Image (cartoon, rainbow over all chains, first blue to last red):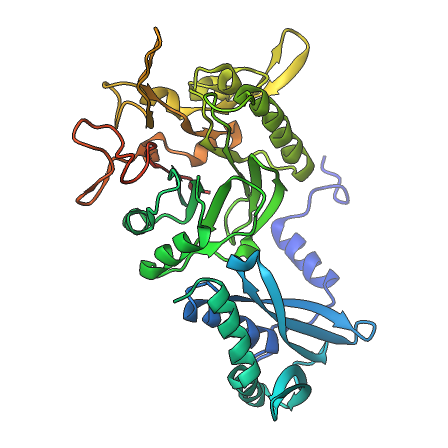
Length: 154
Length: 268
């Protein structure tokens, strides 16, 4: 005779039990709407490689700051031909649990000298605009040009 | 995933190499005797749709290019002769790629079989540390498959059949248990096998001369055997209309290299 309390649970019972044990709501998913800064940075990193035929590549490294309150993404230029020399081009910080606003810190040229500048972006469009400004800055172009020349690009 | 290994004898072979890798859709290129890795990168990427990346290891005598970004490869070990890379590609099993160019028996005092012995121990150590047993070793071993550094239990312990390799390991004189590699190159000697009689040709004046040698080899661990089809292994002698050998079938060493390229695939 089968002991009811010790018999194995059926699949339907197991699924039901699992549902009861799981207290998280059904609708947990990646946030929609804004494109995260890290995604945009990685896209741009990949596009730089394509533009220079991988003589200069870019890599994104992510860390935290202020006791994990903020995520900090650093975009590095990497020159494989120069013993993988790495140059930090810019840093992006945003609240770890929110995508925006994001702060972009980069070195930019002003009247012939180099100065650290901070840009702020409230959303992905502003973030892209700020990145475009940093990429188009004379200092960025000179840095990439110099690394390319030393890497043997014609 | 397709791999190509070639000892390019310090020659500027970038143009033909690019043709070969595009024609065969190679994803990982491993070169020995490559004095200018950047020149090769420029040539590879002048025609490639999916660009190659030069991977970061300046210590080893081999250079590795991958179509996938460096974030998917990690250097688990590297010294002058050997580099071991952990390949972690999305939706694929993790494997170890070991690549080497051992010294020639003809030059210098270093015995390749002694180095092979240390190298085999290092590969086993890395496999244990990382818990990965799917390893492929490729390179110019400067030894034939029957040389003690390749077949010996103190060397790579690379045997000629899958059946033996699938036993995983064996006790040697009741003292030590040694893991096997499968060495498909055993089946590539002479005129009656597929492809050229070897991968490297060297005439000589000694009483015993093999003329053709198989110094360029790919060795597969038993746990990776199901991912390796022997038919994918080819010693290339041509690419389209470009011949890599002369009229007598000997590698075109003045123009390209005295070694022929080795192509193989793994379905991980």
